Length: 521
Image (cartoon, rainbow, N blue to C red; front, side, top):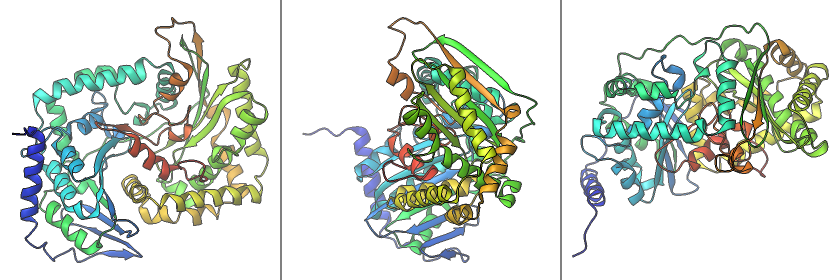
């Protein structure tokens, strides 16, 4: 007789029991107040859960996501990385499912699931056949309220996270530089801390800490359910109400006051450690779209256009001049985290070419900043960049996962999905003078933080190859760039676990920086 793996058997029984229960018709009652804009339906349940459903019938698939407004920026000193650790533990089972059974059930249905943690949020998703959506909703509702946090799971998983930090940061010179850069760029903001946490914090977490974090933030009034795909929106909202509607809201959602003090002068960090090549990070603190003044004055929109002019496509100023024309850099780019919840970095990164010093590459970057400050960008250049950005947005909508990412991130960080949909129209109102003004106001020497990596000789055994060393850089939000130092991922991607993370990264990149069809963005 063929033996059945116990987890597979449990998953099969779950699906069978679920199918039987689904014979009973879904309640026809849906929330009275539903906002409908084209094919997108939005409502809020009585317990505070926000629900956004978009119908896209081009393929019989669906992406279901649950976004929690909690990330490393919400963590008090001593509990750094606890959000990421809880993400790991969310796959360890509930009072009815064992470890990893959630993922096994989704896989048996022909789907895949994952999760990611960033500075500003934690999100969980399933991509699966549209007719299996109800199972995904039942599973997510189950772990929102019934997670089992067991000591026998916690201790080994904490070791896994500690080893993850050792491999991705402590053993990676470029990641060490970025972590030092970010910690010095910010003085008081919690953005200065790594998503994965500092090692002393990781070693100090307790199971009680984790349980308290779960009870405080994993609640319907701190979450948004986003569903995009081949679904009937009203019936889908009824399903969400059926499975999530009775979950009680949290009464203890408190966040530390997050602010950043004004910088009083240039900061420098010089790191001399074993490495194969030099590296430079240069950053400035700027407002995000979620800060009132930036929204009213369109400063964030002007900063976004400035970043796209510098490094929005392969033909933008930095890669064109520094990498291809003058060949003084192996890599050169910039990134602005437009959608952050708080004051955010505008960051430059460069790897000098052989024979070029870090001082020379720093000067070249500053020359490009000076051009933005002193010369108006042409209307033609701005129109071209906006056109490419708009094309990227259109291409990203070919994927239901990318659409769900855009909606979920915008809702969770504060911009709102409707404002995100109208971003192109706001960008078209930005003038060349507005771009020059934000460059003059924020990208000046007195507000710069510069971090440089000066390679020291290392043994062959302890030194990674050049490509490995570059491609394993972990950003402030914990992710690994997809190309050899892709600054567009800085501050925009995340820690992923416990399954493959490529899809979360791809959908995130698709939303962050739309580009030409030559890229995944």
